[in-house]
Length: 114
Length: 114
Image (cartoon, rainbow over all chains, first blue to last red; front, top):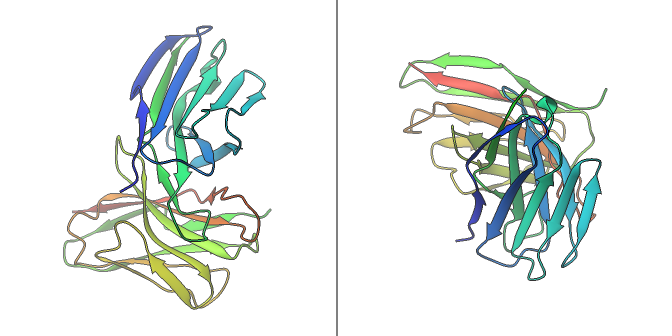
């Protein structure tokens, strides 16, 4: 079945350092979504990428979708303590028409030391 | 404010008992979902529903049951047949009809089996 793998599982950085998490799918994706879950909280949607090679920015966050639409990355420039949390990528399950049926990666847990 | 309300937030259950987790949304979304989250893992789809009185199994439906009698409500019952029910349960909803699967999550229900 479809698998979505994320690396690294954990990342510890000093405040001000950059951070990147990578996502790889075993199948070609129609789109990829990214979510952030704060400690003790629930996942919150960050962004959706649809086009091959697409790059989107949200302030210090840069999201990329690979040319083959099988991989993606999230890069945070100059991390802040507010960036702490788990970052998940997710892709639609193959087949069907319900776009909310997602396969999630395991997530990358980001810790930022002040 | 529009959103998804889950209750209870914390629930303790003895082995052999069924429990029902409530999920209510006022976003007027057609589609609703139940995901399960275990420590260090991504979210896994239990059940989903795209329309009232209809629902489908996700990847890990065994030991769970749902109903969708109203658009706003999608309760999940964790039955005694679920072998490892201790987990964080997340209800979500999404719009249908457009090419986005952005999920809106509730705050979750944490179930512990004693």
